[in-house]
Image (cartoon, rainbow, N blue to C red):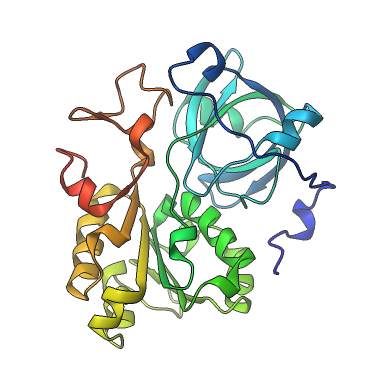
Length: 308
């Protein structure tokens, strides 16, 4: 099993077996609003705009019981500054700690870029639905990300790495606007070493870039061109993360090659707000993505008005 830690990010951690954490029922709001006390234990700069934060719960018993699944998110609070939702980017095998890839965008995220390790924060969650990784056992898997979409997808990639023998062919297709915006570049070789085919494409590149140029759909078409349509329909799942505008182009292309819409999963994590469906800012029609999502199959998304 490949460990996805780099030396500068390694911290002592003991994985204690125990009963898995189960989030309280959503109608029990007193319990559901419980905030874990935590601290930032690692800060790793990824790009000029994105930073990876490792956050660990303070209480040993809470660390033992806390768990999550790929695709879920947490609410991160800095007292006196604010609170916001972020998809979890780390391995689901780690108990009591999460890694969050955060883009500098608002007051909270800007404040985080200025804080040192050891700052105390609050964590609520995990919230939301997850990618059905166990359903994909024994199948071929396409993991597709655009831009910041690699942040929620990374947890699913970790799951695949740690359970590689349970999957058939695994492809990662990742697209960004330019090379300087590529996330988790230090992980690419480790993914390839775990028998995962990684394809990277950028829209704009300077003279030093030697890889493919263009839209992610171009690279995806090249990969699927060698696949038998009937085999894709029977034995392939896809996870797509990125700007909602890319969902239709990517998923429609997958459907042309025979992959059913019910076997494509997308994350509407950009619509997350309070995590509880109380602020009504995550609703798509009559559906609250905080409660029913953020992970949906593509067939469901097509039937949600204004979802994409």
